[in-house]
Length: 155
Image (spheres, helix red, strand yellow):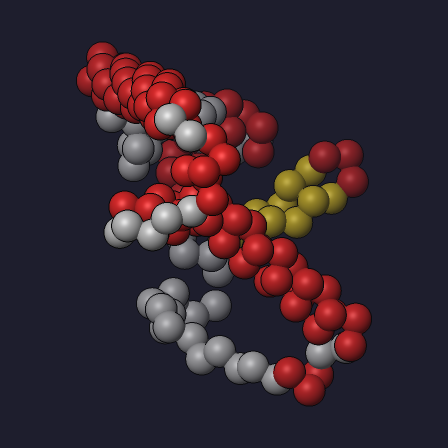
């Protein structure tokens, strides 16, 4: 086996629409349209608010009258409180995790043995020094025989 090497981080993307079936094309188009519709539906209140701030009048003023502004203020107040609570919860959770990592120590990229070498050597019926020697080899061929016998041959 050859040594590992870095791969191209930007592989060439080949787009062959002629190879897609009609059903797959239809499903992908349908999912795309649904996602765009949800996206526009989410942004529609922001567009309405922007148009209202720019001075465009809507029928809402004539339908709701003066009560509409008090309801808008009530909605903004409740929405602001909910947003503040969510942000505070996320910040609290982040600081809790940071504190937990500081107490327990950094666990990423730490090499810890799950099973001691003595147990692995006992399982493979080897000496610990032989196991250490095998661990330093680049390639090992392990063959499982009947009666749970391992035949290990380094390359």
